[in-house]
Length: 208
Image (cartoon, rainbow, N blue to C red; front, side, top):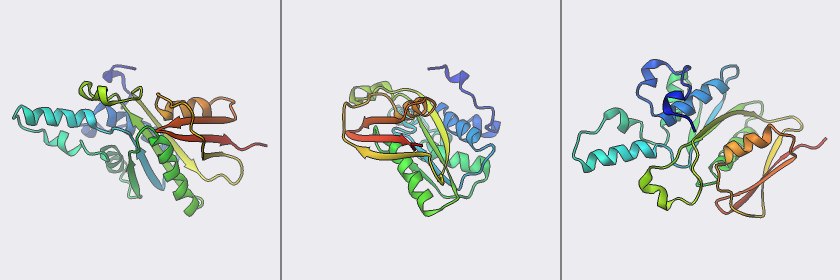
């Protein structure tokens, strides 16, 4: 966890940065870093809760009968981050914004794989990002909420690479999947099996 002021955002133009939430800044910053040297042909931004903190601010304003911020209203939607990334990069490629509970990152990976299977030689930008829900909603959450943002550029490998498959469900993982996946991907581990939202998932490295 880091103070909001410490979140890197130097690649985002100041005009956009001033109006963006901390969550959107994290997502767009890592997306810009990941695509600095390689273009993506499809954008998959996945977040379990999205801009829930910004939505809470709007609801508080409504209850208090105060004027809503047009900037907050326009950027409270779930596809705010991918929309901002597309505007900043002047990208016209297809994009999707996905939410699928605790297994959101895994479902985002499936979305990316489906595109790659039908579009050989193309690349997908997969971004996973979230932050803790507002205090009022925490009694209704069952998982450990952690602030994070991760971006991957994925392509179909001619041989080797990583594969994702369903597996038997085990003990429910309480932490977000994307940081756990990155820790495994950077390790020497062969398989990464995890259960999220009652669904078992296993990532595997190709064996020599």
